[in-house]
View 1 (cartoon, helix red, strand yellow):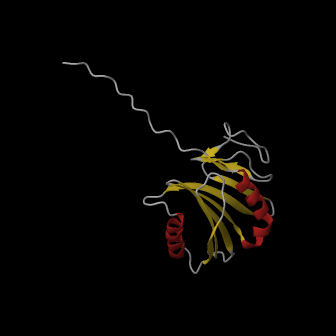
View 2: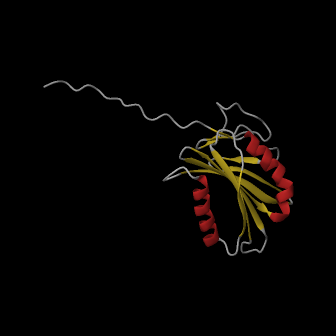
View 3: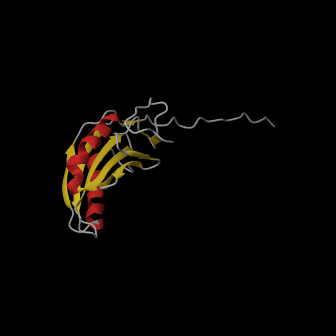
Length: 169
Protein backbone atom coordinates (compact mmCIF):
# COMPACT_ATOMS: atom_id res chain seq x y z
CA UNK A 1 0.00 0.00 0.00
CA UNK A 2 1.28 3.45 -0.74
CA UNK A 3 0.28 6.95 0.11
CA UNK A 4 1.46 10.04 -1.72
CA UNK A 5 3.64 12.42 0.25
CA UNK A 6 1.66 15.25 1.75
CA UNK A 7 -1.68 13.72 0.79
CA UNK A 8 -4.33 12.88 3.35
CA UNK A 9 -6.33 9.65 3.28
CA UNK A 10 -9.53 8.90 5.13
CA UNK A 11 -9.08 6.76 8.22
CA UNK A 12 -10.94 3.89 6.54
CA UNK A 13 -8.42 3.57 3.69
CA UNK A 14 -5.34 4.96 5.43
CA UNK A 15 -2.30 2.69 5.71
CA UNK A 16 -1.83 0.94 9.04
CA UNK A 17 0.91 -0.61 11.07
CA UNK A 18 -0.82 -2.69 13.73
CA UNK A 19 -3.24 -0.29 15.44
CA UNK A 20 -1.42 2.79 14.11
CA UNK A 21 -3.43 4.65 11.44
CA UNK A 22 -1.33 6.84 9.13
CA UNK A 23 -3.67 9.20 7.23
CA UNK A 24 -0.89 11.36 5.75
CA UNK A 25 2.86 11.77 5.63
CA UNK A 26 4.88 14.99 5.41
CA UNK A 27 6.01 16.22 2.01
CA UNK A 28 9.41 14.81 1.06
CA UNK A 29 8.97 11.63 3.11
CA UNK A 30 8.34 8.13 1.73
CA UNK A 31 5.95 5.50 3.10
CA UNK A 32 7.59 2.17 3.95
CA UNK A 33 5.01 -0.58 4.63
CA UNK A 34 5.31 -2.34 7.99
CA UNK A 35 7.91 0.21 9.11
CA UNK A 36 6.87 3.87 8.89
CA UNK A 37 8.28 6.76 6.88
CA UNK A 38 11.70 7.82 5.64
CA UNK A 39 13.24 11.05 4.39
CA UNK A 40 16.21 10.67 2.12
CA UNK A 41 17.55 12.13 -1.05
CA UNK A 42 20.60 13.39 -2.80
CA UNK A 43 22.81 15.42 -0.48
CA UNK A 44 20.75 14.79 2.66
CA UNK A 45 21.25 12.41 5.54
CA UNK A 46 18.49 9.81 5.85
CA UNK A 47 16.02 10.12 8.71
CA UNK A 48 13.20 7.75 9.56
CA UNK A 49 10.14 7.38 11.75
CA UNK A 50 9.47 3.85 12.92
CA UNK A 51 6.06 2.82 14.28
CA UNK A 52 5.91 -0.17 16.57
CA UNK A 53 3.56 -1.67 19.11
CA UNK A 54 3.97 -3.79 22.19
CA UNK A 55 1.87 -5.03 25.08
CA UNK A 56 2.11 -4.53 28.80
CA UNK A 57 2.53 -7.91 30.41
CA UNK A 58 1.55 -6.76 33.90
CA UNK A 59 -0.16 -3.73 35.35
CA UNK A 60 -0.92 -0.47 33.59
CA UNK A 61 2.18 1.60 34.30
CA UNK A 62 3.65 3.18 31.17
CA UNK A 63 6.59 4.59 33.16
CA UNK A 64 7.63 1.10 34.31
CA UNK A 65 7.62 -0.01 30.67
CA UNK A 66 9.76 3.00 29.69
CA UNK A 67 12.20 2.34 32.55
CA UNK A 68 12.67 -1.20 31.21
CA UNK A 69 13.33 0.30 27.76
CA UNK A 70 15.94 2.67 29.24
CA UNK A 71 17.70 -0.34 30.80
CA UNK A 72 17.81 -2.00 27.36
CA UNK A 73 19.08 1.22 25.75
CA UNK A 74 21.91 1.46 28.27
CA UNK A 75 22.90 -2.12 27.46
CA UNK A 76 22.70 -1.53 23.71
CA UNK A 77 24.57 1.76 23.27
CA UNK A 78 27.88 2.86 24.75
CA UNK A 79 27.39 5.88 27.05
CA UNK A 80 24.02 7.05 25.68
CA UNK A 81 22.74 10.47 26.77
CA UNK A 82 19.09 10.08 27.78
CA UNK A 83 16.59 12.87 28.46
CA UNK A 84 13.21 12.06 29.95
CA UNK A 85 10.83 10.50 30.11
CA UNK A 86 8.57 13.55 30.04
CA UNK A 87 4.79 13.25 30.13
CA UNK A 88 2.97 14.25 26.94
CA UNK A 89 -0.57 14.20 25.56
CA UNK A 90 -1.72 11.99 22.69
CA UNK A 91 -5.30 11.60 21.36
CA UNK A 92 -6.82 8.26 22.35
CA UNK A 93 -4.04 7.40 24.81
CA UNK A 94 -4.48 6.97 28.55
CA UNK A 95 -0.80 7.80 29.12
CA UNK A 96 1.96 9.11 26.89
CA UNK A 97 5.56 10.16 27.34
CA UNK A 98 8.58 11.23 25.32
CA UNK A 99 12.16 10.06 25.68
CA UNK A 100 15.18 11.45 23.84
CA UNK A 101 18.38 9.51 23.27
CA UNK A 102 21.73 10.57 21.84
CA UNK A 103 24.39 8.02 20.94
CA UNK A 104 27.33 7.56 18.58
CA UNK A 105 27.44 4.49 16.35
CA UNK A 106 30.61 3.20 14.71
CA UNK A 107 31.00 6.10 12.25
CA UNK A 108 31.17 8.59 15.17
CA UNK A 109 28.23 10.70 13.95
CA UNK A 110 25.87 11.69 16.76
CA UNK A 111 22.49 10.05 16.31
CA UNK A 112 19.33 11.36 17.99
CA UNK A 113 16.26 9.27 18.68
CA UNK A 114 13.02 10.91 19.80
CA UNK A 115 10.70 8.22 21.13
CA UNK A 116 7.03 8.74 21.92
CA UNK A 117 5.34 6.03 23.95
CA UNK A 118 1.54 5.87 24.21
CA UNK A 119 -0.60 3.50 26.23
CA UNK A 120 -4.21 2.45 25.80
CA UNK A 121 -5.16 -0.32 28.24
CA UNK A 122 -2.42 -2.97 27.77
CA UNK A 123 -1.44 -1.76 24.28
CA UNK A 124 1.75 0.28 23.91
CA UNK A 125 2.46 2.25 20.75
CA UNK A 126 5.94 3.57 20.04
CA UNK A 127 6.84 6.21 17.44
CA UNK A 128 10.60 6.72 17.03
CA UNK A 129 12.32 9.43 15.00
CA UNK A 130 15.94 8.54 14.20
CA UNK A 131 18.17 11.17 12.63
CA UNK A 132 21.63 12.65 12.79
CA UNK A 133 22.03 15.36 15.42
CA UNK A 134 22.91 17.81 12.64
CA UNK A 135 19.54 17.09 10.93
CA UNK A 136 17.28 17.25 14.00
CA UNK A 137 16.20 20.89 13.62
CA UNK A 138 15.42 20.26 9.92
CA UNK A 139 13.27 17.16 10.41
CA UNK A 140 11.67 17.82 13.80
CA UNK A 141 8.85 20.02 12.37
CA UNK A 142 7.89 17.20 9.96
CA UNK A 143 8.00 14.68 12.82
CA UNK A 144 5.80 16.90 15.00
CA UNK A 145 3.34 17.30 12.11
CA UNK A 146 3.30 13.53 11.58
CA UNK A 147 2.58 12.95 15.29
CA UNK A 148 -0.43 15.28 15.05
CA UNK A 149 -1.85 13.23 12.17
CA UNK A 150 -1.23 9.63 13.24
CA UNK A 151 -4.02 7.97 15.23
CA UNK A 152 -4.66 4.85 17.27
CA UNK A 153 -7.29 2.42 15.96
CA UNK A 154 -9.63 0.85 18.47
CA UNK A 155 -8.67 -2.63 19.62
CA UNK A 156 -9.89 -5.45 17.39
CA UNK A 157 -13.12 -7.10 18.43
CA UNK A 158 -12.63 -10.37 20.28
CA UNK A 159 -13.32 -13.43 18.13
CA UNK A 160 -16.96 -14.51 18.13
CA UNK A 161 -17.77 -17.96 19.41
CA UNK A 162 -19.24 -20.09 16.64
CA UNK A 163 -20.60 -22.92 18.67
CA UNK A 164 -22.76 -25.41 16.82
CA UNK A 165 -25.27 -27.36 18.87
CA UNK A 166 -24.32 -31.00 19.14
CA UNK A 167 -26.94 -33.62 18.43
CA UNK A 168 -28.36 -35.41 21.42
CA UNK A 169 -27.59 -39.12 21.75
